[in-house]
Length: 180
Image (cartoon, rainbow, N blue to C red):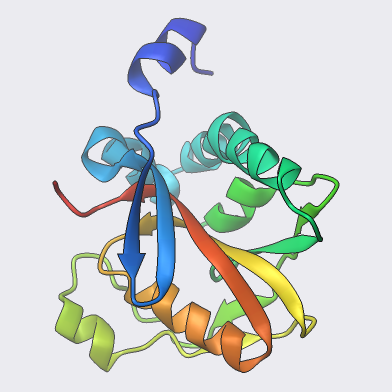
């Protein structure tokens, strides 16, 4: 689907970390560098592109992280609800099953279906995702999402998980929409 030359020139990660509340958010790319591909999640080709990003970028990053873990942890993809025939966050975590790290699909779901696309921070704060966690307690986990914009979604997810005795290690996203 994507030739090796394009992979090396177009999709070279620029890993960055920012703090959202008490959560470290690691992003593999700058949003402006891959936004047309991320926005494809609403088109038929999105399924293939999100699988590509999961296999070629998310899985190797998480594999390296898993090698340093002393005890098992879970990957909780943010809101794995199926839209447009698939869950883009589930595709990102699909290939990430390692000795001390594995995905727990469908455990963290938003009950609010309001779209945040293009919305202000104020709108996001007034319309929280209302996450529901249905998974084991007393575990360590990391959050996985495609884009971090304001960080409100990841921060809300962290708060809900911590209230359920889940220690959130950090969040991983494909892209950081913050310019700079």
